[in-house]
Amino acid sequence: MKEEKRLIAKARKGDRRAFEELAKKNADRIYALVFGYTGGNSAAAEDILQEIFLSAFRNIGKFRGRSGFFTWLFRIAVNASCDWKKESRIVPLFKLAEGELQEDPSLGLEASAEEAFEKENTRTLLREALNRVKERNRAVLILRFIEGKSYEEIMDICRCSHASVARRLVKGMKNLRESYEHILRGER
Image (cartoon, rainbow, N blue to C red; front, side, top):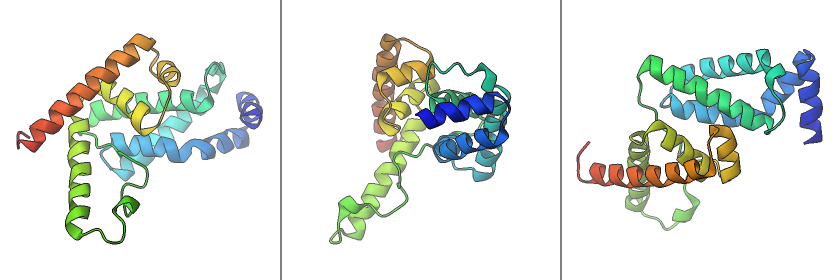
């Protein structure tokens, strides 16, 4: 944390190398978020990532340090991704878990191809259902259950109250469940 504060102070004074170091430390997590918003479009995700870091560099003087640097950067990323989504009108796909495309260790060596197919099919259907949840509720679901953020961190990122976070989680889970059930019934 001390190192981050030192880098932020240097970056606020125009030190590009300090900012680059901050960017490198956060790039993978920000890219994963943006990649999800673009529905897996890596070219668009790269472009948006560049915009995010350019915006962050230009506005580093506005960073007050009331939240962590990643939280501030995450907010910029969500806004940039939402802008892209509005412009492109592409339905986003979200990564539901780290390493999702890798082999699932919970299946074990004895797992049949059918079990593996079922797990992957469930993930695909959940991604599709998550895409149907209203954006602000979906963002809170992702922050809480995928990113593992606390209510306080979500409040800071989304700039809303504890009650709003709780409401959005409840509504988001309800919408996710309903969407998933519609998909299972073939109501796509």
